[in-house]
Length: 295
Ligand code: SF4
Image 1 (cartoon, protein in one colour):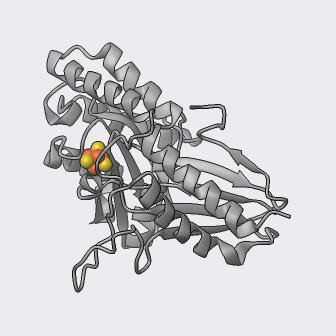
Image 2: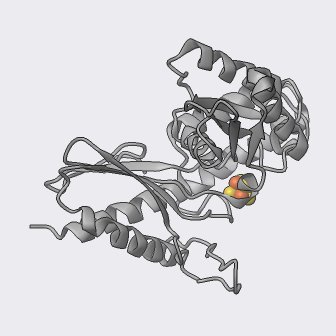
């Protein structure tokens, strides 16, 4: 019998290695497509550098010196037998991955200062837990870069501004940072709930495949409108001008209080790292975003 804690840890180390070095196929495809269709010479050079960087990283070097703050999205089946081992295994995996890949230590104490040196510390890695039906465990590693995080916002709008106000907030935010978030970006928008719920929904949108559309046509239309409006700004890759400022805009919502219209805007950079695996109750592992055959 395999050691379940070790299987979870080993799987997570591989997820972190793949996340740091190989972009998910949908993100790479979108960046290559943006390069092919770009008409601005400066932007084309920027996108060419990004695409070359992706190729070099594939050899095992992190694609960006900012290897992110450690975040996981975990879906645990209510009958998965090793639930109590997950937090410890994920934390050990972060320490191991930081030393072996290596990853830049990015966990700083905001009160007394000082970097923990191994990407762990109070509440980090941050784990977003979801209990789901079934008996398997799905882990998504989501190391998040600081530059794009710095321009994520929550707006508490007056309900009277409606969806026009929501779209304006997202586009105005993009105009305010003008590519400082390592564009082309992916933008997640969460509408409703409350301040914390809106930004949580917004960030979850960054896990969606870039080529999907929201199943509700009204929401898909908002995604399209914001996507087109931000790309029409001409901010371009790295903010130096060009056709592609965002690769995708993803929107979802929760019901809201009658007096509130919270909007979360989560900004992701071109280094949109995420990797997912599923571990069954008999400890077989399926890598979803980065199959084992992939180098
Ligand atoms: S925002 Fe993204 S691309 Fe820019 S430095 Fe941070 S991780 Fe790297």
